[in-house]
Length: 439
Length: 105
Image 1 (tube, rainbow over the protein chains, first blue to last red):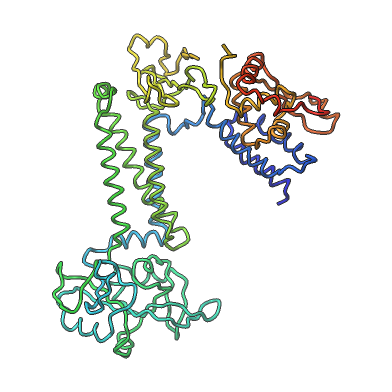
Image 2 (cartoon, rainbow over the protein chains, first blue to last red):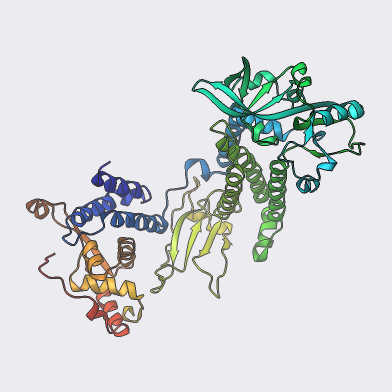
């Protein structure tokens, strides 16, 4: 891309922020100025000049007193909830269609009795403190001993050995970290072996090595593994006794009576805990929203619980969008990106902010978005901003005053309900006859 | 009343630049040394507050000089009163902004 095209592209990108009514004029001015900047005899920095357009466009976007951003879908509460429900459904469907996302969900649903076992004498402090041991610590001999002594305490036991093996791939021979295991492991994990074949297949000694689309299993099980090699029991029996690996089991009871081994539950705790925290936070938020606050409390009590119910519905519909939407994005490339928790966290923050902002812009009576914002007072000559903005319910239920900055006389936004006597100023269809412009 | 209003130093510089005859954005940038991301939004605010007004140059003039038409800014009466008040507040303002050389709006 040439410099000239790049500069025009920057201006065009910035112009998307400018309100549509002013866009063509704004773009014409910047392009005209660009023409002169390019011919500046002092050699002005043209790119820096163009980047300033973003700040200008952002200011116009923010200053637009009559934003047309209230989309058709958001204005009415029913349409807003329908849109959120549709987005939630889309995220759920995507999570079940994306193989890696589906696998993560399955891992999150691992049964609580699924555990990893480590010998106590290994003495790894990370294991003692309840973290998965990242290194193989159970020898085949110890595994056989465990199986002989405590088989009755488990509904299933499996052993896998990570190894660096030369694997034949479509791009030639490569050395990969492969877990040699028996099919029992996948039965314990509730992962159908046939689902592994969705991934790109490789081979070692003529046997298939699964580099799974379910790369989530790499993430969920200890050891950094590229693939899985399912071996026969006989091959395992032939391994040297000192060969070390990991032992996965499913407890029959809630505890293990074995003086040589301890266990740690395998269910992905961070993900599940994060979801639990998110859901708890959502419920707490909804609960707090039902408690009237400040001077508006009496008014909210009079208008009943509809506003709170709408907030609750909105919050509960946003939850799957955040939880599963971030999971979908993090697993788009067929493996779980480590960005998942970041995406979910920041997505959650953005969602809370949006829920709050949307709720504040709605009429507490009919729950429709307020409209016709009017700037109140003189703009300050120092901060170049206005004192406040007043919005009105198009059905004549009242006016909302939003201060631009806290002042002694108005620190927070106030709702002023209008009585039935004001009804004559509003059309039956819900549009205002008179816009009270006070400046 | 307008004479009592107070401008920030940056806004006063930009207003003074326009008053001095630097009547388009890039000219104001050059004379004030401020970046485009400061000058243009400030001019929008000043225009919103009716201290300056803008007009597009006639297409025929631009065509004659084989360049795109420019948008020019001029002070309103309110803007002139405000800059006079600002010059009392910032006495060195006039020294900071020289008149344009060989430039005609």
